Image 1 (cartoon, rainbow, N blue to C red):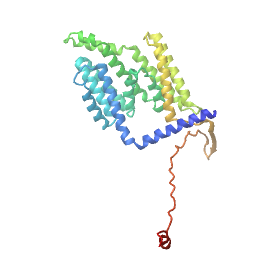
Image 2 (image 1 turned 30 degrees about the vertical axis):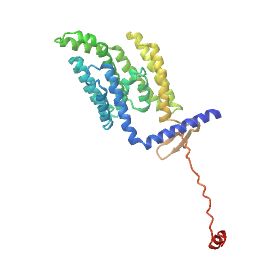
Image 3 (image 1 turned 135 degrees about the vertical axis):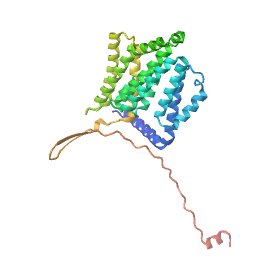
Image 4 (image 1 turned 60 degrees about the vertical axis):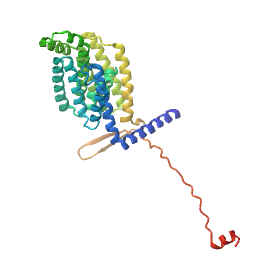
Length: 331
C-alpha cells in the first residue's frame, strides 16, 4: 500500500468506528426509527403496486400503522405487510385474497420453522426487486446468514412474483365473471405456479447462498471477497443457463448490471461486518496428549477514533498582602 492508500484506508476505518460508536450510543432510538422506515417503505410500496383498497391507500393510515410497528417486534411488520396485501387483493378479487392468504400461511410456517430471525430478509427481498437489485440478497445472506436463510429469501421471491403477477393480471381478473370462481382460482394458481422465472430465481438464489456461505468459511485469505465473486458468477450463470433451457426471457443486461451493483453493496457490508488484515496472519501449532492443533489467526483491522481534548490554561492569581494593598492605595 502506498502512503496515499494507507491514509484513505485509515480515514475509512475512523469513519466506520465513528458510525459504530454512534449506533451503540443511540441504539435505543435508532431501532424504532429503523422499524418505522422499514414499515413505511414496505406499506407504501405495497400501496403503490396493488393499491386496490382505497381506504388503505391513504398516507395517514400508513403513517399510523408504521408508527405502531416501530414500537412492536420486527416480526410484527411482516404480519402487517401481509395483512395489507391480502386486503388489497380482496378489493380486487376474493380468489386472489384467498390464494395470497394460503401462501402467507405456508410461508410463515416455513419461516418460523427454519429462519425466524431473518425478518429483514423477507421484507427487503421484495423491496430489492422493486429497486432492480434483488441479487444483493443471496450474496448478503450467504455472508451474514446461514444456509437456512435460503428459505427466507425464497419466501421474499415468491411474494414479489405473486404481487407482480396479480398486478399485471388485474385487468383480466376484473373482466372475468364474478360467479366463475373456479376459473379465477385456476387462472391465478396456474399463472403463479407455472412461472418458470420465479422457480429459476429461487433455485439460483438458494445455490448462491449455499456457495457463498461455504466459501466464506474456508481458511483462505480474502475468503469473503472470493465468496462474493464466486456467488455472483454462479448466480448469473444459473439464470442465463436457465433462460436458455426454459426460455424465461430474463433481461441479460439487467442481470449483469444488477449483479455488479449488488457486489459493490455487499462489499460495503463486508467492510462493516468483516474487515481483516491479511498482512499480519499468524499460524500457530500446538499439541496435547490426544491432538495436534493448527490455528490460523487473522487479526481484525481496528483503529482508535481520535479523541478531542480541550486544554485549559489557568493563569495564577496574584496574592496581595495587607501591607501591599495599603501601599497601592497610598497609605
